[in-house]
Length: 383
Ligand SMILES: [Cu+2]
Image: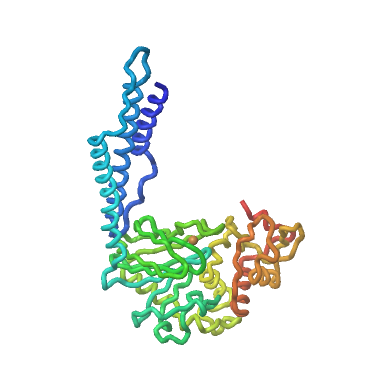
């Protein structure tokens, strides 16, 4: 009796919770309404089975409960008619669950011919984006070309790679109502590119290029996140996708460097650099190299120490010793982060292989974020 009552309560609470739950889908912002439809089919079918099976158990518990002097249960090892019914109903249920998904998936990986191409490279723990330039072609890439200065591993001798747009930072823009074919690569481990509002996601498997397409249908600012647990920095693996009209998109595109431009090293004094002073170059680098995923410049907590007021601070290290955060210390920390870990932070920072001039620019940027008061420690900047 108690079990029957508990099961009945479970069914009622589940159904009520489903309708009144605050966790509904975000508003749809792409062409993939079919994803919502297949999801609704799944919820409906599994929901019906859940309710029917549990109510059946409740019924049998009550109907066939033990009663003094009542009839004994009959042993019936086989019931062909019942088996046929069960096989039939579950077959229909499973086909209804799988078939719509297969149809939608076939569409999902077959982009229209006029789709623009956007390459996404996932790396612990940031996103990078590349677009074809004026030639409309993506240049060849190879793992052996990958370096701090060439994170996509583009072939420096491939003419088709020279005009490729190498997006600086974690933010990419897309034109409204234009199909986008996504090409996804990973630098290291399994990642998954996911923008919930687009209902579009795909695993990124190291060593292969995966692909899907979508058409953004609502202008706005969306968060791109990693949907595979890819290491301790996984929650920081966030990017931004901005959907806007064609004119704004083209204007943004013009501000992004081509691969050839990123090959020209920024002079330490900034005179020949694309973006002015060393600190300004460093700011661009902090975006492009993904530093900003873990280091804030407004003092708010992150996976790594904030850069606000960091320069000149006396830091307490994990072993209890202290060190002055001067130029030499910062460069050492960037080159070899595991050698000295700052107290209160996990040793999660990857080695950042930067040419000397970029290192100078990055440190200049950190320096420009203000010096700490003497004697303050970095722990105070934490939560
Ligand atoms: Cu990831």
